[in-house]
Structures are given as structure tokens and as C-alpha cells.
Length: 193
Image (tube, rainbow, N blue to C red):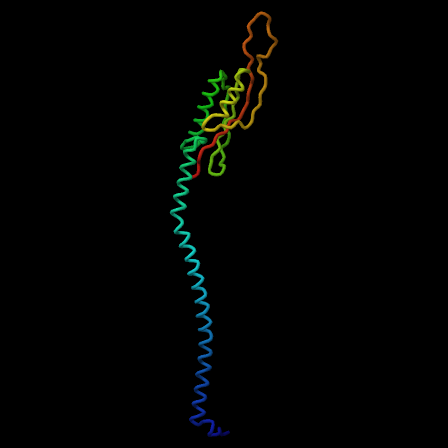
């Protein structure tokens, strides 16, 4: 079988070479163009995200300064127990409570600490007390606890008549009746680091 000569002429060869070149460019150029636009889109997105990160990093010193100022205000707050750790805060609460109780002619029969818990950057210190309080000194004692600085909060209280509430003996001066008081006192300490 013979191939016609007109197909092998210089014009036909040139057309075939141009067609082959165009096809080769199309096969190479289309994926390259698509890849370029995808890379351009990813680069633009990455630069946008980098701008956001840089803006957040620029805010970091300002936010750290505000946090330090907030911590200092909270640590120096008059309503909080200022102590380096829980044990010292607990000891301060017990010392102050003992003073309040004694100033009101009462006595601490027992005290028991409760588990400490964190409440939003604050540590709650709680101590349960069993007290013996003269009946006329109960109100001043409760007021002294509630108005104390740093702030003390009476969480639970149970009050009952003491054993001395016996029938009076005629002619003898009776001692002031005492109440048995069980109460839980809470205070707070700044604990956020």
C-alpha cells in the first residue's frame, strides 16, 4: 500500500507539526494553568490567615497586661483572703473566726474544714464550727461574721438550746443560757495563676 505523496509534502508536515505542538501545549498548559490558579488561591488564603494571626499576636502584650492588672486587683481585693496557698488561707479564716467568737463571749467546741473547690479563679475555703454562744451574744456574733473583712459568709446554720436550759432554781442567780450553734463559714482566696 502506497501513501500518497501529497500527504508527505512540506506543507502537510508543517501542519502536522503545528497541530502536534498545539496539542502538546494544550495537554501541558491546561493542567499548569489550573495548578497555578489553585496555588494562587491557596497562597491568598494563607496570607489572609497569616494577617489574622499577626493581628492576634499584636494583641497579646495588651491582653497580658490587662490580665496582670486584673489579677493584681483581685489579689488585693478587700473581700478576699490574701494568702499564698490554701492552708494559709484556712489558718487565717480560723484565726479570725476564733477572735470573733471570743470577742462575743462564745467558745469554739470544734471546727472541721471542708474540701476546697475552685470557683472561677477563686478558691473557696469552708470551715464548719460547733459553738457555744450566750443567747444575748448570738446576734452580735452573726453580725460580726457577716460584716468581717475579708468577707466571711455563713452558709448553713443550726441553732438549738443548750443543756443548761433546765428549770431555774428559786433564789439562785442563773447563768445566761447558752445556745449550741453549728454553722459553716466560707471565705474566698484568689487562686488563678
